[in-house]
Length: 378
Image 1 (tube, rainbow, N blue to C red):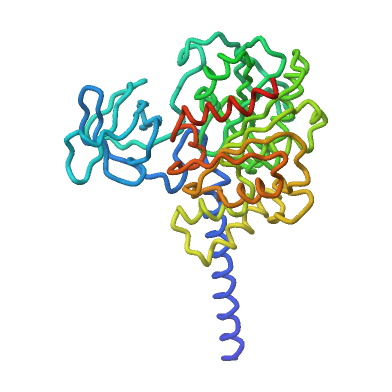
Image 2 (image 1 turned 180 degrees about the vertical axis):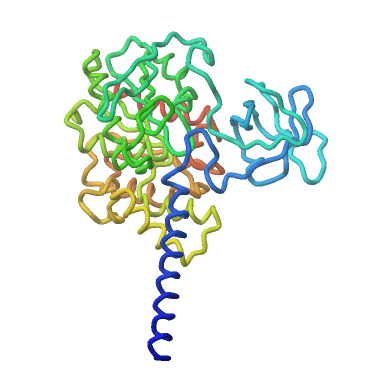
């Protein structure tokens, strides 16, 4: 009788441990599968506003606040734009002073918690940039997808698709540049975004199913006069662009790809985001399995012919912006892809830039590199 009770107790403990592991894996996988648009990704630090003055803002000293370039500075009820670090400005040992370009809305007061974001502009292209545009709805697989269309004189359109932690506002960083060169721009909100349908399971699939919304945008563009399209994607939006260029029924209309910080391995990105949530390493495999069970995502298929990073599936000129400081999507995978297809892929390496913020680190160089890539496609 004592043996039976001991065995039953051991089974109960094992079942409880198993259930706890499943729950922990599920919670850890939320870091990627439930990353809300427009909110900081795990690992992006909250900074404290220490002081503001004419054209200046003092922030908590951290690696993030020392980043070179231009960024949005977002708070729970505010948005501003900050420029480079002002090394000559007076500051305490625990602060960094950056140029304060403008406060878009709200106020910045000492003690406020803020974070850096790639989104320099908020609102819509008319309000933020003074650009003529139309609010349109694209018929998608799950329902209508809101998008902005900025007209241009060319018959090759740029379709811009954001990634993790951002919104279609991210595309506004490049709208003036593209507009000066006559490109119509279609900036898409896809499943899970504000105003767009939710995925049936309410989860982010890291581009694995979302690419079909980009496919719908390609069909819309072709239906309204585009002869060719260039797909410009950030983060998981870059993964969507790769998948659409290979699998869309209109892939022959895709003449080029621009990939910023591409997520080429969803498992690696999920592990990175879960780790940033301080998930113990022993639980990371559980997070991956939980993500697969919840979404149906395939296993890591770097060597699989159906993988988005398979160089054999590329058929159009591709420009990748990426850097070794990206802790969400490894730069090494972009380098591997570029090395395997030097005939089609160019890699522009950006130093000291976080995930999906390659433009922010050096806007002028980014735009000149993009200009040289787009010119032969015009």
